[in-house]
Structure formats: structure tokens, C-alpha cells
Length: 411
Image (cartoon, rainbow, N blue to C red):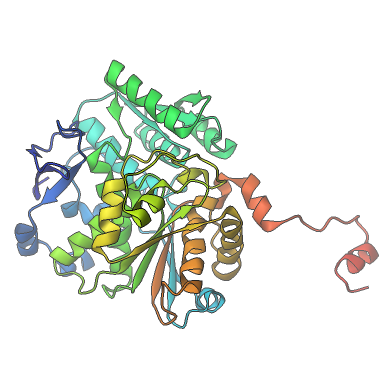
């Protein structure tokens, strides 16, 4: 916490001491963590990172709002692989380079581990014994896994909507979370979790409310920059649900620029599913956000009432980026494309980013000679039902070589 100045409201500018359980401004506005960049520039640089042998998200500790001796989950989150794919670039019609960062290889299978790792630290700093959140699945499983890794000193309480994929629910139960399946939408789950948190005083892991969690999410961009030797691409592509992940990406880029670690800030391409695209519509129209139905198979970004649209849209605009919306069929196609060109198995919400890139290239929003990095946010094993929709059925044959030859067209 040496470099944290305060928490500042993005709505009214009020400033607060960075207490671990400070969530919102008194005006109801979202808070943002501010850092002492001049002091950071004096005491921390790229050479210090190069000498750091901790290849996890905690290698960026000076840019995280946690104490150096605060207890952390032992799960190794971060430093996920970055793949360069010429085959994917060709398939998209791009002459430039395309990278895919596979954050589905974090401990519980998604980028959300980065936020939850910070959440359990802040909960411990606040003396909390119970941490709660609402989630369509990934934030929930990441919290439950990180809490479980502490060995019983905390309990997680998770609120999921009825449509949450069974793979994600199974994860929660295996990790020992108390799981509340709310028979309604994500909005219903969020509102019930908020009421429960207020009534019983549990620590709030909801990323759009807790300002510290965006700081964990931004580490995916800090990592990407270091893996690219600080030479940033023209575009950075992310799927968008409640807006926290792309807000975190923008915050990470801001940090890197302020510290002089990078010279170029990539443009952000934010992608929503057409069946649930309230941030996209608000961004394009310039009007107030209107709640949307949650009609998409990409459950992790099916957020009809996003809680962090302001930070998300601000970061996209600040980068001179754009937003697009894609149909479920495009998402399924992107799942196949990512798997067959990169060997990365992405869940639907994760593949939505790639689907958005494909659309943006076709529409001329992303130039054909652009260099692009796509963040794959979640592992496809979390949603096998939709993976099978994307992949199709296997060949089914009897244990007979002639029948196999016929099926293979080799008869």
C-alpha cells in the first residue's frame, strides 16, 4: 500500500482513505484507486521486474492495493501463456500479428482469479470471515477457490442465477462454497446478494462495487505488456459483461503509460453479445444505459444491468477504441476458430472477443495491417453444453474397420 494515495469517486471527485471495506462514494458513485506515480517512477522500473523471479500476478505488487505482508491465497494466479498465431491472423484476413492470451489457464479457469486473489487479501485485511458475491459462474468459482486455498479461515457465499452452467456450479460445491441458486436472472442474484451483504455484514466481492478488484483484473494487461517486451499492439480485444474487465484493462494501460513502461496505448475493442448488449447500445447512442434481457448463450457476459458501465465506456473512449455486438452464432464460430488455429479452448463469453474482432475486421473498424491482442478470459471446459454446440458431433461407428473406412470416406 506504499504507493496508494486514496480512493477517488469518478462521479463527484470525493476522496477517501483506502480502507479495505470502503466500496462506494457517499454519492453512490464508483471509486477508483489512485497511485503515487512520481514516487513509483523513482523506486520501481522495468529492470526491477526483470530481476523478479515471482512469475505470478504478485510480481506487480507496487501497482496493487495490498500490503506487502498481507496474507494471500497460495493459488498461483497470473503469468498465463501468450500465443502468436499466424493461422488465426490469416483466417481473420489480417496481415499484422495476432496474439491470444489464454487466461483460462488460471487456477480456477478464468481471468476472474485475478480479482478474487485481491478480494481475499482485502477481506483478510478487513478481518472478514465470510466473503460473498453474485456471479454467472466465473467470479463465483474464482472466489470459492481462492477462499478454499486459505485452509478454512474464511467462508464464501455465492449467489448464482438459475441458468449458471452446471460445470461452474460443480466447481463451487467442490470448493466448499455455500451456493445460493437464485431462481431468476443475474440481476435478481445481484440484488439478493447485495441485500444479504448489507444485512449480515459480509465482505463484498462484487467487482463493480468493490474498487480494489479492478486492480487485480488489470494485471492481465501488465503481464501482456511485459510478455511483449513493452511493445504494445494496435488493438486490445476483450469481451464485456458488467464492464469491470475492460475497465481494468484500461486502468492497467494508464498505469503503464504513467510510469513510462510503454510508449503506445492500444485501442480497446469491447465486445458484447447482441442478446445482452446494454453497454454497447449506450456507448453507440450516447444515451443513458437501458437494462437489457439476458438472451445469449455467453452466460459470463449476460449481464442485463451492468454495474460498471461508466468505467468501461470511459476507458474505451479514452483509448479511441470502439464497441461491437455479435450474435451467438458468431460466438460459436469463434470458439471453433480459436480452437483450430491456436489450440485454445475458450468458453462462449471468452470467444465473444474473437467474434467481435472478426466482425470489426469485416466492417473496416480494425485495419487489415493491425497488430492485435485478444484476451481469452475463460476455459471452455466450464460450459461443455455450448462447446458441443460449437464443435458438432463425433463420428459414431461400430468396432469394425470397414465401417470406419466408409465413415472416413476411405472405403
